[in-house]
Length: 379
Image (cartoon, rainbow, N blue to C red; front, side):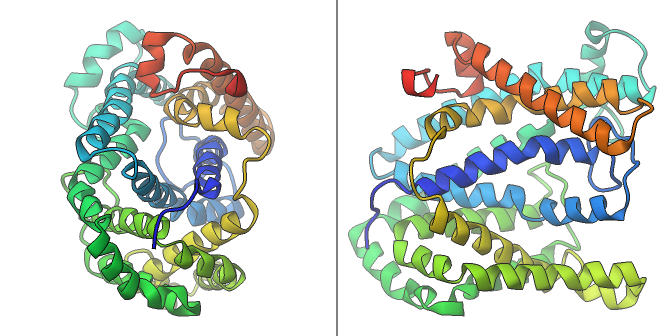
């Protein structure tokens, strides 16, 4: 059991998830689902339902990819080189975003909601001194992902290093062989079903790291799964073979609560709500379906790969500011909600890619974005 050549499908999953964050965060503005800086709910239940489904597995999928990336990285780095690389690539953009990007987004939200009437310079001290959101303004926006990822990378580093030792690989190969055979791969859902049942009712998604044990358990498990997937390619071969069944299972598990909610049968809906074993199984079904189809169709260096791979991380860092600015300007316009949504998405994509092109070419700013040095193939 060994790590083979680069698995491009993991890169493509990361790229596509990051790109979909623009329409995802733009949609939250107009729905009753989730939190965002500019909130002006107008859409119907179809939009709310679609967004609610995506919210359950899109970001968790990035932790699976991060685990796989850690496996590939540790093939060519010592543990301290790995930690240093993660520190530079995750903590510097985190602090840069927390200080330079989140306050302007929070300011636009405060202006939109009428809770602050001054200018941005006047708002900056309020951001840090008013208390933690939702009571105050202090928050870390979408940069929660970076601090979680760094923390989990450090926590799991001894486990990752041990898993890569020859003796451990042999043991892992034997223990994980059952996951290479058909639906037995869904044994991976059992820990998540347990954690969702036991922890989620007590710890909803706070994203504050210190009191968020349901998410901590879920994300740690998913990073370990990603590492295992990269370490044992035969599991991913099985995930590929199971892709259609995984998708059907995910759709079926999703259709039940959606149908019950539409029918107004709220009591029967309880076992299929988040915070139950149902939610853990649903999460794994969507993740395995996404990885299976990516493994089948995206495991190659296709057109625009170099460009998108070079821009993916800066895009993640920057995207929410253009989305928030566009929503601030457009949300209250007297237009059809779908037209407003389309305008926000198009403007945010254009502005984010333009910012990526400009800022990642400036050496000091490139470091703040965690961006790679631009190359002719990625320009």
